[in-house]
Length: 447
Image 1 (cartoon, rainbow, N blue to C red):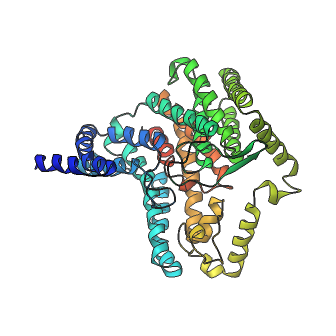
Image 2 (cartoon, one colour):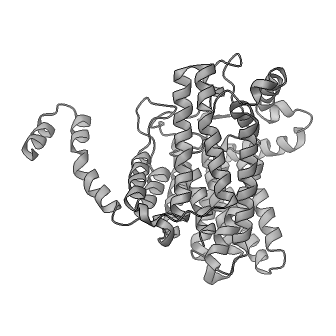
Image 3 (cartoon, rainbow, N blue to C red):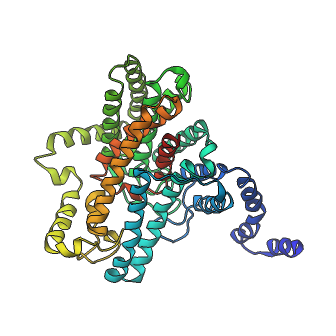
């Protein structure tokens, strides 16, 4: 059998076929090693999601991603260590389960109104969202509840991903697979917005805001409770802030500002907050200076975009919000004309991929999108999830355990920004970074 396998590799005419035939020689030992500890697949899943691009295969919007392999390994690991699961009832667990149930149930209206192809796409996106829920329950109540994924290693993987996004913007590497058509028009040419290994720039901006909030929370705590050194946090902050700016995402910047405001409120009686603000300000200044020195025309355009947003938000709202108002008006008009159908929805993530409303519509609003696609039940479930996450994180932030308090404050501040950013983005579709957010939530609540 081994001889026949080696011969097949040797005589295969194409290098890609050779690599495909030889892949089990590397994958089987890797999977065997991964299953040796309950949390290993999580570490590999996060590393793959943050550092690897999608495969250049025409499937879906951007092609299948290698991290899905480790998600499948994680599902097998959950079955392998099935006796170690200890799920406890809570409001947060009920809210997450309800949202998943509503999304799954919306596949039926998708098939009814838009056909089998749209229903298959809706089911696939529900499955991608389910990965985040599985990571949460596996970490909080499953085999990984007594094991840790190294936050330091995760931080450096994230910093490397953000750094690659900056380099990618400078050299404008060809996209390895599908990508969102998001560009910046400068005097020197048209450039694709920084997106790194992600499908679109907004995902990169949201991901950078997540770790910038972590850095701010770390500096607000005593040195002994920080996960990394001051220099490491400052250097990473500069990289994350530069990538956030190069992503050209205003909503992610607003997310960061809201998170910092919540952090200020949490630490209003602590002296260390001033030091945290100073160090985070220095990191942001270094990131902004780097962008200004390396990309002066881009930095000028980004600053002009921010000032124009503030100045013309109410007088020229349509232009400031990049056409979102027209999409929102279309959805609101459809709801007013079809109130009965809006109660049950037309199927999760069918708006951008069907002509049911006369043409594809990109909602760019998580609340309005779920209302149209999953009905009033989906909107209510999302609001319930947001409230439950903020309450659970707030309780964890007041914990006597320093690690629990750190993760609780991190999630509380960041998710407060997420609640606001959902007004201008479909954040539940960021399936490659959403598991990371719910993993941090699981670490905060599992104690």
